Image 1 (spheres, helix red, strand yellow):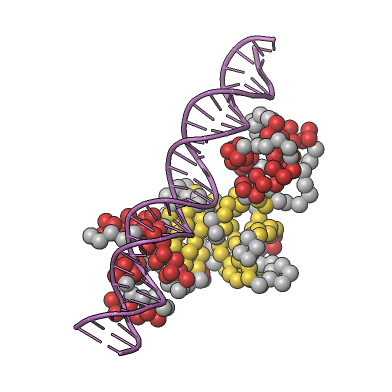
Image 2: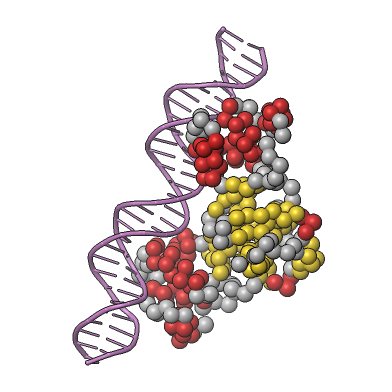
Length: 135
Length: 135
DNA sequence: ACCCTAGTTTATAATTATTCTAAAGTGAAA
DNA sequence: TTTCACTTTAGAATAATTATAAACTAGGGT
């Protein structure tokens, strides 16, 4: 994804393309494969990569803004870690608790034949499948 | 579950049946239906129910000891809440983010027809299905 | 029944993750 | 360029959980 597209992506979702947002967006979206991270890991990677330090609160703000805009999805797994995922399409996850690694599973690789009806007046928003791994 | 069974349950898993553990175990396991709770909610309920105050750290210790012994299972859902579940059989969950309520789904009510193979040298430990609800 | 000791509980401090606050900075519309 | 609502920032505040170390206790050995 080119810089011009980054700017479009931000503007089209009502986010002013500030220096910090552009830097974070470039880091997250200028890559081929999907990327999983926590706020903590992202902060470390950004600190290492660039000279200008971005405040931790800004990283929180920005990641949540991107999530609200639909540019990131949030995945929560055992161990109180909150991951974000640059893959926002409908998909599932492997979770390897040994390495704390999250791996995408394409939605087409999981077929659910039967699910129960939603209770009382509720509807089903989405179905998430976690496949926990061991060695 | 009677008191004698509570004592057996604790002893058989190598846990000394202290006053606090027995009180917590009775509260959790002397009921018909499965019970979902957070450490915080359990603390409030216990405080309300009994005269003797149990330290919060003890509730953490005890709940984790019960979990390690296989008497509770842990379920993590969006919103950084960690729930425990007195139903330790293999099953799935509805999650209602409006009410923060977790509802058990019997394993037989979910049939998964296709899942991907585990990566490299890994094996599949278990598969958890979350059905997120909306109004 | 009484000790003894490892296991347990407790209050409190420490840690960790996240959000809040309020002051300073900055895109971009006019 | 000026202006102002939106952003960023450092640091404080909050929340959830874990660590610490002293006091307590269940239960085996005497």
